Image 1 (cartoon, rainbow, N blue to C red):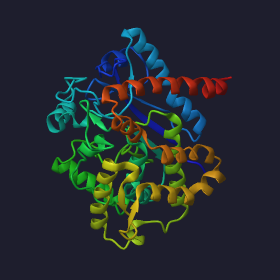
Image 2 (image 1 turned 180 degrees about the horizontal axis):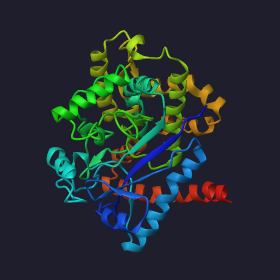
Image 3 (image 1 turned 180 degrees about the vertical axis):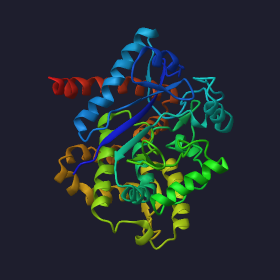
Length: 379
């Protein structure tokens, strides 16, 4: 059994020098398949759900190639990697839809802390009780996926001390989200939040992972991992996704994997532990000291990931997608995007130059993959 996968990708648009420019109004008017975010400086596209990694690779690349051509025609604009306003502009909001009351609320409540670019990974699970159990586990392991994906060490031209400034500053909402013991518990809790006003609508649940579906919270059909920074390299993103899918297949196959029964810690202690782990991963990513949810023991993020990789490799191999999982080794060896950028920064390359180089490298990588892989698939 393999699971359906799909991505929501948010990216910044701007100049080849790295200045982020709000263009989403024009993009969504002129191009199909792109959606606006509350701030006009980033734009979102989604890939169609599919069990196939090859088709997801092209689903990630094709809209981006189309958008690049459009931006080039518009005024030599480009796509800018990273998950924060790396080189400036965090002092004010650039509204994409001034008439939207939900956007009013977001701007007034959170300011530019939410003006980030990221990737949300959606994996299909149709049984709501299995989905809830999967959400419990992946919520506790979400810091590992943040550690692999961190790409926002800069804000307004400065190194912030975070590897993921995005997640370090992001307003997780509501303040306290329990580990849902069942689908009924989730429904009851969401209804109570809507009534209390701590959630403005069913989408206003901003945690590292959440159950998603066509009629939330009642009809649910997928797990949405929201913690990842933007991963610009599709091969790296698919490797992270393959780890998530293989772990979910392991969870589906083994009902005993459940923090409510397997952990020596209480549900409340687990929530406290995972909040600390998320902050540690946002700060130090792969080098973060985390606490394992089973017993609270200390483990390095990279070691926990390597351990998980060993556990699920056989599942990925059996299901035919282990070749997409194996590039994870390269991330563990060479570091995520934030770590690579910070290495350059440490030897005297300023943030502007780092981002300029990343803009060029991202475009070249996309072109290489498009030529090598997607063209041959079409042929």
